[in-house]
Length: 538
Image (cartoon, rainbow, N blue to C red; front, side, top):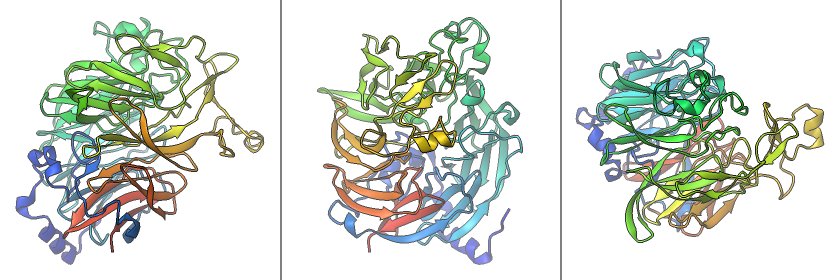
């Protein structure tokens, strides 16, 4: 572990006062202190909305770079930082925690962690962020451990083994803190795990409760796996941040695809609880309700998007809603208290379903399934969106989502799908399972769109020249921040979508922006390429 210089200890101690511990009440009411960013999407509701308004639609054009921190890792930088009273905490992939001065980018300390040699992830050795409670940071690791780290000194407090990395379990999500517990889910659905969500005592690391996301024999839903043993390695991983509703004491997590991803012949049935949102009692882990977005998925349409909780006026009735832009190309409004399906519709080109039945189950289009000859399915196997966090602004009442448009793929029975739009260069290189190059207006592209939750109709669109893996942030200054694979960080007018400011950041944006303030100055931070950038007004 790298030690602190005496001056760094003094500076950090002065910044993190003894009376400034992060209580759960502060996390629960993080909107009251917008200078800080206390969880992955800012608050337990995951709205990714900042109440700071120093940066506005009128002055965003004047934003300038204030500092840059260069990570040593060349892995995808998907983490969203935390900011606590002037100190910024982030993760250098895969599992090195770094504490920085949020005003200057100066490093206070680093905490390195070396995962087990057998740690494997499907899609990069990545980490999406941290959680905090008291003076303790919490991080999941790619070898499926949960670590507690002293936020002042950068030293290890405890280490809990969540699952066996030798069985391809891993953790890539930012943990969720609820009361005195830290809750994490396991990734590895593409490798044939049986998904897990587990809660640990924040002080001791002792396990409090654990559930599997696939029901075993005798449990409700087990018969949806065809009556065989496919449930044992059926996936349904949990690898993105959850949300929490204090009024119902429910914590919500999205689950991933069933395994094997593209071949459902040995797992006939709906395959519960894959491709679902699960509402769990935060104290016990007991399942209270679920909604399945894609029954019997054969297109890898993980439903691990970040759930967004919002109190909205749903068609004239005050409603405690959950907003969800799904990887399967459909957008949803659910009642977060009961799980009732309120409304849903495609938000990108989608050809696999024609509507919903009275219970909110998608109606499949006959023949739009993997076949021996190959079937065009929209959206692509990577979906309309993926892990990128969306945003809801209580000021504008709009739901902001970064996603792909016009994507599709040829689905082959029992095989990895083949991309649409493969050009001759890719074919010569033997790359027949990659995304197409982007040559014309008929190929996939990235967009940031604003949606009205009452109609799920777009109010405006900002089109990018390439696809996007980046999330979005909205602010009280009526600015929306986002970016994409083309390597630009942009500020948009939250009401109209007009481009206010655009900055090249030297690498693709794979994370969601966040905002904080130090000494009265508002900053906006984004990870791009292998660097963390902080912008502010002159």
